[in-house]
Length: 145
Image (tube, rainbow, N blue to C red; front, side, top):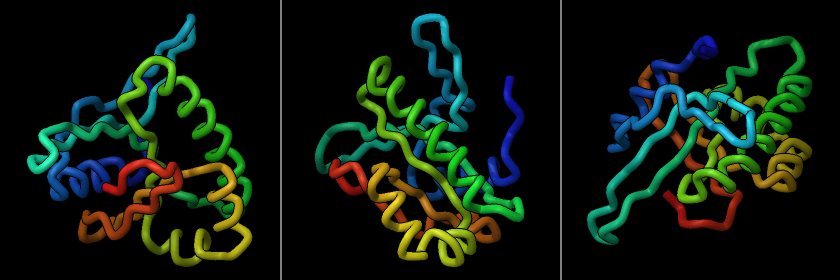
């Protein structure tokens, strides 16, 4: 079993505050002999649409001196997870969770914005102190949460 990221509980609480039900902790991805673990699976009932929205969340802290190296790893992991989730659980969309200070200091840089857009990385930005979701950035051209 993988170990939790630094902000695992904060993201879990932020999702719950936002009306999401945690359905998997961790979310297990199994495909053709490969077994991977994304941090969380969650579901939200949208009453007006009478349907459920399902997400998988991978939490990243970006706490090392080289956020670009962290991004390289995150993009690789995100791409692998997205590929496999589309095969085994296509009803789920994948989201990368990052703290709001990291988003503001790193992800708003023009080059980083282009990189995340080119890789279609959807992001959930959270505040670890208040345990709240600050922003959803949807790069998949699917419905906005």
